Image 1 (cartoon, rainbow, N blue to C red):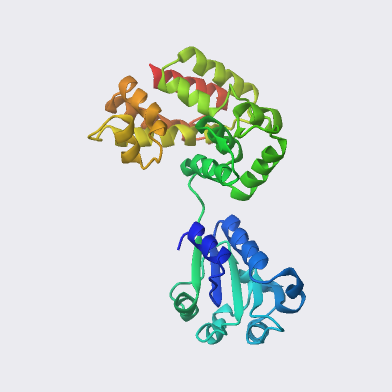
Image 2: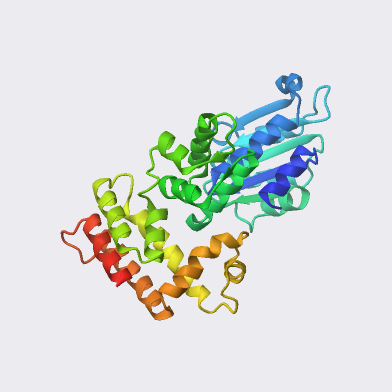
Length: 334
């Protein structure tokens, strides 16, 4: 079951007696847990029928006792175990999970990894409840997440703005959504789009000198613009780390390599090949196919691997990240 499907079921009060939310991405775990705490019980029933404990501060027998209690003047009671990865002998919860009480909704938050899927506890929860695995989103999918998240708030944004946020904030979803929340507050009345200007004014990312614009300059072989941006990055290294630039470029040219074998090299065909929802996202790839042949693309991917190692100190004694980037750009575009 996907995150969106699970959210819809909870909002429609289609509850399961036991939930296991586990994985490396805490954002989804927190969102689903918060949704359950807001939905299962009305506020006036929470004092008697809602219990939240932490794995380090409780034990399995105590959790089972809580879960086997009956609600007071309510259809449900909610028991949430936060930081359940710290619950000693958690596998002993299998005794309860094999026969859970349907008037209890037990939520197990297991962060920083997954419960062992070979254990009987996992099988029991999977049979009688819901297991949701919350995985980190790869860097290259973050712009799509940003666009979708902003749309869920009734607003829009463009690919450039999403890429700016992605490059600056990375794939920490909690950090991303917190920054977007600031933008939602800052947006002028009547405006419906999170624009690059709004991001520049409120988060401090340059709308003209960023990895999105650098990639665009490379795609179009605009050597002057690419070097302008490289100069800016060299003067502002803290806000423009070389490692992030390398990820952006590597993701693009890795995808471009796939495009050479696409039967349909139109925007629609490339979008279908790369799994993009919107054909407009493939526009840059169509341009790049004309400016870089397959052999050059392979050479660029090799260069990116070499310079990624150099910026980490491999075979590099004294060159700065700025010098390395300028050298790399020369080799890519010539």
